[in-house]
Image (cartoon, rainbow, N blue to C red):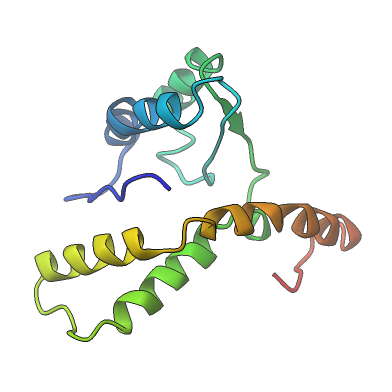
Length: 142
């Protein structure tokens, strides 16, 4: 699992590009040095911006970019992951009182996720795709 990146302001295409450049490329080069790693993102405006799209195309030999169809929440594990992180923060013995406390609690909870947490979610994608195909892109149980 990669690092959590704190955004101090609204995410724009240029800010997202700096995150890709500063964090994603290094992370993928370490974890998937063979170039076989896959990067998945949703289709929010900053993610689909021209600058981000161009950067991902330029680095396509370093890792693959998994493209999602528009409006495809059943294909993205991030919602489940954020929900699990929220629950982990809520279960902590002390509730965060300041933004810095919240950031610390989120980072600590993130680091405490079991090593295979995301792998399990990724392995469920096969079933998610099959369910989505069965309902021709409509809502599924996921």
